[in-house]
Length: 67
Image 1 (cartoon, rainbow, N blue to C red):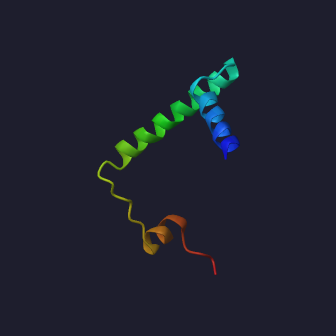
Image 2: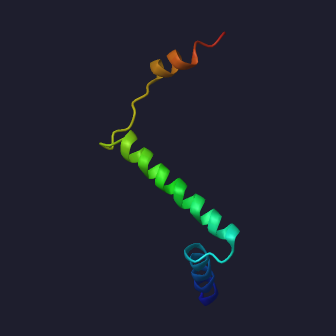
Image 3: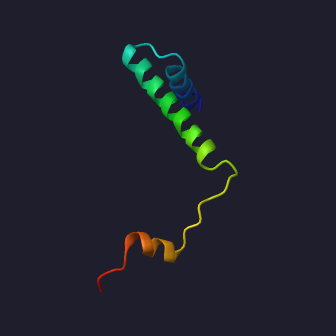
């Protein structure tokens, strides 16, 4: 169990304090993506409403199958 906890601690430390320039760039991009996703969620669905899509709406978008 100690090895698992130690590995998880090392993983978290690598994300919090990256050592190489490549690791720093990767962490920066991941944080940037997380901020972008949170912004989209906040402005796209501000009241926690989910878009309602039914079978008729999907048929209208996709089109009728040629059977």
